[in-house]
Amino acid sequence: MNNPEVRIVEVSARDGLQNEKTLLPPDVKIALIDRLSTTGLKTVEATSFVSPRWVPQLADADEVFRNIRKVPGVAYPVLVPNEQGYRLARAAGAVEVSVFTAASEAFNRANINASIAESLQRFQPVLDDANAEGVKVRGYVSTALGCPYQGDVPVADVVNVAKRLYDMGCYEISLGDTIGVGTPAKARAMLHAVSQEVPMQALAVHFHDTYGQALANILACLEEGVRVVDSAVSGTGGCPYAKGATGNVASEDVVYMLHGMGMQTGVDLDLLVATGAWLSAQLNKPTASRVTKARTMA
Ligand code: HMG
Ligand code: MG
Image (tube, rainbow, N blue to C red; front, side, top):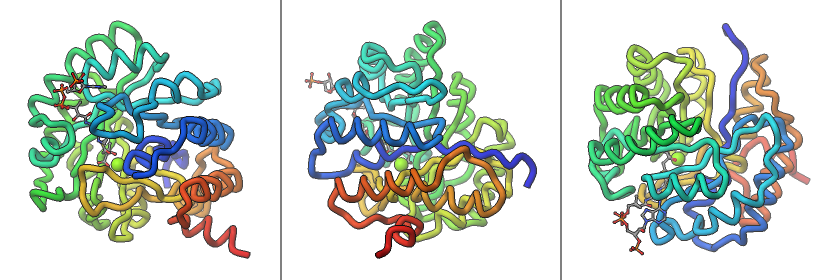
């Protein structure tokens, strides 16, 4: 494949934990991020500055963000839903943030209590401030391959929201299959359509693995030209406002597939597997990564 370099955006410390009912102490989250920082990953999403009532697990965002080791060359973006979250993130020292909306109205309402148009309006001051302060902003589009309330989501709606976020100044748009219902041809067609309006270099894919399609979807999107993939060690993850959705595709499995195809990530798979196994022990859950299962079987 042309351009064999792929950047992995590791989302376990945010997406991976946000739906965990048992509150993990901040020390464990800090240890997770510090471990991930030693694996060669270039982007480690750290936490969310959202309402603690909406996502109690990440109520310690400030403490976690202040205490992680910031390794030079590694970016630590954090989610912000509004200006209030942006200011809290900045006060904690964040220099990269992510805003998030969706391609379907009902999910967006359930997730951030706003219509799509209202959410974009809320992001404008965030982008204005970020621009003035030299802060990078990533944009997420959820429900890009299906919505838990609406069902099918027209591709044109995904394209419109992605383009709006890009035009507002997001440097990268991550296309989320929030509930993991997509299949390869559909994923590829969606990415292709978005890439007609937003340059492919500014696109990322974010697949949950509910139906076991995530790796196949990623391969189809790599063939279409995407070179940024979101994933979470141990296959952790899920949105509390997307009922029935399971974890993200496991980073270990993505890296194994990419390296097997001769693509480069800069990530040390052994260290990633060790971190995934450590996280599943902390969560007291079996890992969802097939690679970690295979490598750690007695
Ligand atoms: P709201 O209740 O409409 O907010 O929630 P509000 O503006 O009316 O404020 C209500 C209270 O929240 C106030 O406090 C605010 O101060 C507080 P009170 O006066 O009642 O004590 N508040 C905040 N506190 C801390 N940080 C903030 C903040 N903002 C308001 N930033 C809101 C609206 C957006 C805040 C809420 O809906 C929310 O926080 N939602 C976050 C949901 C979330 O994090 N979902 C998961 C992430 S998205 C995802 O997982 C998908 C993704 O992975 C991609 C994919 O898979 O598709 C990215
Ligand atoms: Mg997600």
